[in-house]
Length: 116
Image (cartoon, rainbow, N blue to C red):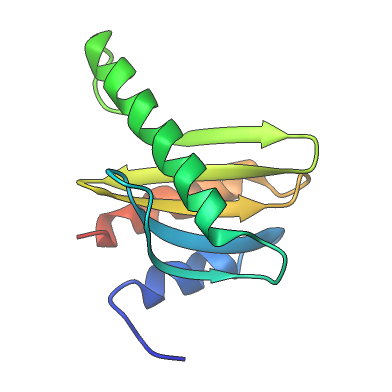
């Protein structure tokens, strides 16, 4: 496995309980920049969905005068997607439905500063 500038961030997030994968995604076009996901996780589909949701939330939040989005969570019956971004990059975590969101939120927000 090769090392990239995002290896530390991805490793820190994938070690969390209930995490099925972590991706660094371009907010603009939803392309995977770097990722480590378990078998069965469609990284391209997750990247496209997370980037679109994060971008839309950021734009709407700014338009409403609420400042920038710091954390986004999509929860469903079978799992959840958590995302936080900086500049044009978004760190995305795919987790099981029962994963501890508060812990994931803390780690992803601490890690997002390494997105440059």
